[in-house]
Length: 212
Image (tube, rainbow, N blue to C red):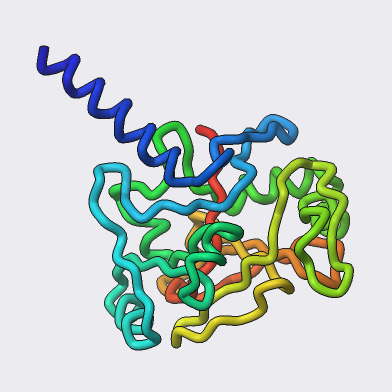
């Protein structure tokens, strides 16, 4: 009976986390041998139900990063942006052992991001195929022929300042570069490629989930 109860609890938790993606958020797309979510992560709890702290003020965001503690926010602290772009997370939320991705999914590693861009023709061509067909500034939209549906959610730097919504889409990988730096991927409104970066773990970027 206890085993059945635990299984039911796990099913309920998974359903709750998937529902927090928003309407249609459980949609996936198969790209090569990978299965990606088509929307950015928008959860406020870890897999075990623990809350991920929201950091609204610059001071709250800076303090979380300096203490290597997980944090999330909406771009410009506006929930309306969350409905479009999902939440921004620091890397300490991404890497927390409690797990930020829904059951059955994980945060892609640097190598898995590379697998995606290689399949789409390499970093110089993949960006256009990954960008959504609308939402990018100055006619910077893509073809979205991959189905990835990448949107320009902008980012938050380690000091709490927000930048470049409409111009940049920036996503974490699960792979460390060094003690304070992790690998990321970026789409840019004036460029058809994909940029691989090494960014401070205190920054706030979007998160996209990959099926296990």
